[in-house]
Image (cartoon, rainbow, N blue to C red; front, side):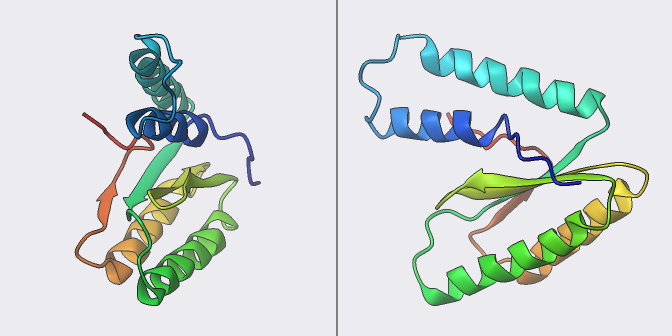
Length: 135
């Protein structure tokens, strides 16, 4: 089953917009509040047995990067179809995350990691969290 609710992508996109100067009307503590909410969401999902894998790819600058991301998305979409529960999410020109749960999710997560590592250009970062860390 594919879940469409993604508690991470929206908040991370908002933080990126703030950092780029696009949210000047934010309360001084809004960014920190969103970071706290992200950590709470991650802890909750881990408690539910959900596991995450994120590829931080950055801005897509050429056709080669675009093709690699398309290949990774197709591989992850296939893997997501093999487990009881899955979600694909991310922020354009930043990162992509697969979240898996269910009896075979650990094996599926290994396959997702292998797919990312096989395709990975030097600038990609692969991490086991849905939260892209920002200073």
